[in-house]
Length: 437
Image (cartoon, rainbow, N blue to C red):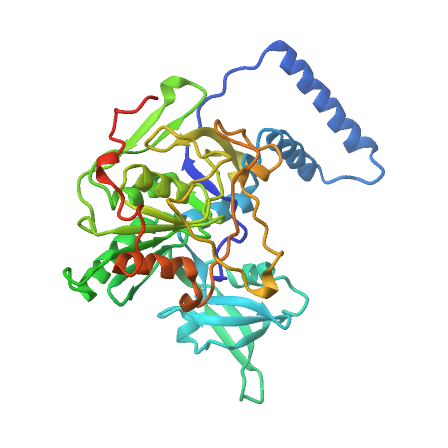
């Protein structure tokens, strides 16, 4: 877990809106609202203990929104700020990746050139106190929140280190920490690109990663790329479009359709494939949702890539973030998106061209759920949804050597395995405006 990153983010494709004036409700609606006001006053005045009025109102608003679908909600000022942190791709913190072990915060790795690394924090260190408060008994999220904070503010940490007899006291000053949206590496003669989330920085990070890989591997030696979207919960809609466009020369990437047919929007690719048409395999699983599914669906429909893995989560809706009073915000489902072939993945997910199951370790057998969007109470019914639903096991082995799906993709790119779906047949490309809408 990266210190300062929003935890447990709901899968989403998000756009931001300044808001539009709402149309006035009818007379009968205002009568119902008067009843709501009367109930609120009764609770406020007569409940057995004095209630928190602000929490009452927030609960009432969220009750209304949760009756619509699982992804619409009201965010108070703190939650809205967390959402902005997540989508902006940076935060105020010290720059360490952590987990919880033996009731202490364990440092997985300090990020280069961040306050944590400069202060001497090492991988394997245990943080026992944060600003004098014991970590034991805290949840990881709470500990992470305490290490986040305003830029240029100090934080005092007590660190336990193997081989050091006494606790180490460090005071670290928070700085702006970028959240890595893309991780990349060269695997012999293949470029590996893992998109972690779709933040404001995703396309820029992806572009830089592709450039770096192409500098490391001569063009005549580079077999192709693996684009890993597994366990990616989604994020910004525009970034999903940019990432798709990075591999495309033409064609419709995605369309969004709202309640008013006149509000339908289509987003098309522009000339310029950053990989110059190198073979591409996209990895997906049950943890690939929303913006991830937009990318996988576009590259699959336009026959630019072969999708490999297991069925994705199946979230085909778009949420608009509308600022409200006191810096809160309304997250409202305003549209459904459709792949270039005119297909909605809502409740069904992206079906891979090549299905490859990822075996689970013995200690995880039966513990990982396979449910997707279709299993969420109150979800919007998809146009092609069946009882089979969406989603699949969402697991990626920590060691690439054990990663069956990744190694299958590498074998295809290197020609040691073959499949009729790879490479995709360009004669079957769904071109823009040739499909029925």
